[in-house]
Amino acid sequence: MRGRAAAILAAILRKIARRAPFGKPLIERLAARLAPALWADGAPPRYAPLPAATFANLEKYCLFIGYPYSGHSIIGAILSAHPEAVVSNELWDFRYLWEGAAREELFTAILERDRQWSENGCVGGGGYSYAVPGQWQGRYARLRVIGDKGGGKLSEVIAKKDPRLLEKMRAWVGLPLRLVHITRNPYDTIATMYARLGAPPDNLERGLDGCIRRYWELAGAVHESTKDLARDELLVLRHEDFIARPRDSIGRLCRFIGLDYNEDYLNDCASIVYADTHKSRTQINWPRRALADIEAGIGRYPRELGGYRFAD
Image 1 (cartoon, helix red, strand yellow):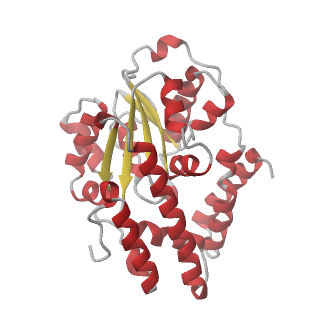
Image 2: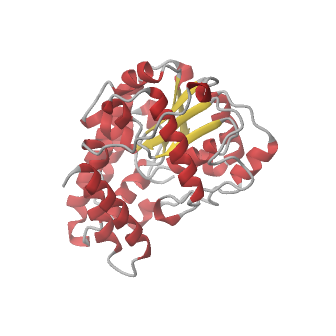
């Protein structure tokens, strides 16, 4: 199946899964198998570039890197609620680089994607709305920061297709990069990855093995691609810290990117943050070997994941 057709079908299946009274895991598993077409050979939507003057005040380009099911969507939505920033949700900006598009075409697509997403209620995975009341999603006052929320997909592309992607993106967009690396307790992320597979209980260990391998493949890609970045280019933000202290984390995020903020912005953004973290790890009867594998992996990446424990 060609990339665009597979991508469309994957999107339709995800919508069906959100409303299906039964069979949801199986539908989501099929959608996940089709989803790689989004970056393997799927063509991105193309728009006539807006005038260069539209982007004359741009100062930074923002990217997200990390793992699936780790809280990227809400952070991207909060950034895009700022009056001086537009961050699209899963446009997969790297496809425009591969297509040889001008940077103005990418920037135009980011604005259009953000407008469409806002008009549709800023709905993310699982049907959760990331709409920030009273703020600037889908529009802007002065455009200083632009980017795309890719997260786990960006890491997957770096791991499997293009290890030098960040270097290429920096040269192409012609702006200083700001990378946001969201981490979540690996036990929770891997447990959610496994749950989304919809695998039957008797395949627990085999299914977990695949999820664990994929997680550490992404962690390796993140580590290798960010280890030589300047300190002002990379922010590591723990999902658990964000949930516990959203106003502090949002302020830190804005300062890292170079955006001013006020109390109204902090309060409105904090109002959409979940009350507590979801500890997916408690929903699995973990094999002892799987727990040991994850503990060892955390030890290999102390800069990114140091301090995470199953008992947290």
